[in-house]
Length: 450
Image (tube, rainbow, N blue to C red; front, side):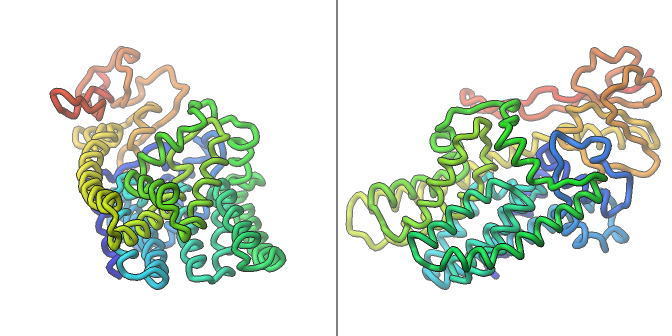
């Protein structure tokens, strides 16, 4: 229970500082809104590059639906985030409980402590990313794996891979193959019999549900896999070096656990880390063959890195080696630095949603009114949860004439003669080291007709 409360509290702090959403999570957030309020579905007008599943939004909308009669839309945005935070805190708490049962109280405390001081997973862990829904099921599966309850482990891993994020299938496959051929925990036939019916249920469920909402036959996650993995179309959003996960992204999202993983596996050669290390190394290496790389594609490694880090710290605290003592004390210092860095990054991230602040400023100026939102504004904080009665909103990207609107939100005010600038919203630009300051710049201009 303590692990749940600690995780949930940190999630809540992140939500209160940065409640709004970016483009990566916008589909699921808009879908929850449309399911709760029964409005015209946003995804039919703005489908995105590939379809996404409605399974996650459906589940969250069922949790928050009763509150629609009690709170405003704006408050409902917070409740959606709180619901996701509660679900994620619960899965993390379950995993921590299994860690405590197998490895002891000290390891479980380190496991949660390493997580709480990290920025990326705590900042994004309460957001409606498909990766977060997949991560929750992976954490459940990892917990059942530690518990040696392989049947439920296989169910969680198969559903997370087939419904939410296809890349989890690589990590799941490595785990199962390791269990079968290296650790001899169960047979291939047993795994196949356990997985097959639930895989069928998962595929049929996502195809039926998502085909209904998308209005054509579709298995969303297969299309995502085909787009990113087979066609390699994700290169449009940038290509990183093959080593980027190892030299940049993993050390950035889990700096202390990553260092402890390197020390424990390659320097100390602690054998009981090897099953976890094999998964991290195999999965990250496999993902490195895809040119477009983002930290969220390998975020499933973080629980494994945290667990290995906790096991290493537990081992080092009893060691008499001078080097081990230095690493142990250095880890304490770095954890404090990580916590301070996370607070600072949270502050900076709170400045990163100028679209939401711009729309709020319009609501304070005039209502009712007609508002046009350009793509940049829409991608940087705005959701339909901010809509209020009496105002009309448009995100039409093909318009040439804007004279029917009272206000425009734009990042290019020079394109709009006949409108005057009434407010400018600034957002995060960069961190300047000397003299140290958080630098902001003009991001979105609010323009009024006349």
